[in-house]
Image (cartoon, rainbow, N blue to C red; front, side, top):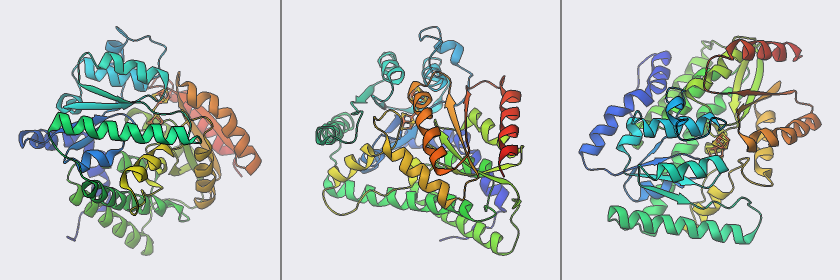
Length: 386
Ligand code: BJ8
């Protein structure tokens, strides 16, 4: 491992700028003849692309720049994530979408799955049929056959063969990355946490736009080491008196970092992200023994997203994070018009009430017009935490 001597703020900067800086790296990879697959969701079995020697990249857009363009086709009362994602594709403003040879989506919420039908008019789109429950054996076998269907599709489209050993190797590599990112964010379980929530979020979000996997792993491990050293020397910048907040709800990144910012300007510090930007992706490992196809399919089906009914796994993870990160409170971010998360919010409130953890749900979109409202609500919530 090489020693990374850059100061910590610079390392964080390298991850927060990763989405922008990754454009050039992606262009180079394309020039080298690599195949690129754009994805939208945590249910996408990432390891399959790695096993096929393809480059996966997240496409979910996180700004309102192209929403007006999307609304020429899609209804305006859709969630901003769906509209922005489609808008960037149709306006040809997302280089990652431009470079993607294929887009893989899943039938998660209704808005997203119907959006893929329109996206299919301008890109090659493969949609995996995701069951909406984890509890039935028929759901497991249906999802496993969807994983096999994707394998066959990739083999045909890219002219590759994906063997069991290729998949085993990819599972191993992705597990290593998950473990190192988990070790990174678990440094915020310390009291005080080893980093701010803004730094944690931009690091986790940025990590998906670093395409050299070995170099990325080394960079994450170096950062963990540097953070531990700084913490041991008492160089930590986070005040012990700040109220510790766990975030739950819809995925974050880009413009929705505003939620973390207002919390951290109001006497709080975000210690953990239960959502798809954080623990939901990195908390567990795909088993490395046994049939790799079944292991992969089962692992992804178990993701605790509100599109599942019932969604016990979200509650299990959230309860565990509250304990591990000594949460003073939980704040949920629900994107406007997201039905799965806004309805499930009622159950989350009841669940946390039983545990004695204060809870607040914030609804927001990709604009900055509600910044003052968010700030006032965050301040009022943090003040109530004892
Ligand atoms: S696994 S959270 S990435 S579906 S916010 S588009 S649910 S209306 S993003 Fe998600 Fe996969 Fe679940 Fe994660 Fe629909 Fe809601 Fe919009 Fe959403």
